[in-house]
Image (cartoon, rainbow, N blue to C red; front, side, top):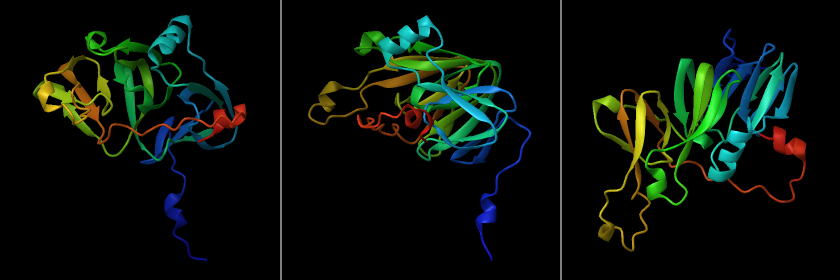
Length: 235
């Protein structure tokens, strides 16, 4: 029987994190533990176990409760291979070498368990917005997998003044500082309902990755879905 399915054959790699394709991440556990977005597992082979990762300490639990920032994470361990995805969004890999990046929470897919994470506020955000604006920082050595709603653009912050929509800026590098910019003339916005009155401003030495979207709308889970296993493992 002739078939074209061979083009979808599983990729082979010695790296722990590998792109199976632009929408699908393959992680080789090999006795290691990773953290991933809750519900992002779509398949696995071999031995893998899943558990809720929790908030990672009282300080981060309080930050998540107050800010609403920070993904619900699951820990995945074992000796098999697991495939992760989220709504067929594009997956991108970043390898940190004792470095730090900042990620918009909904765009974080997975990272090595040795990488530390925290929740940080954009400078100047609380004065301009009711609850402020928060993102997730990751620091250490290892792989980080992020999501974008479409092919992104990588902007060199040092080359020119750089601004982006807060939901479109999905991650930026160490050495980049952020602030909020609100210089739109309000009289031009009256009656138009523009959502562009507040932008993020980026300065310093480094880069920012911007997706061609303000992010996907997250559906509210149905109250009838009461299975903890379904909530943990659903893709």
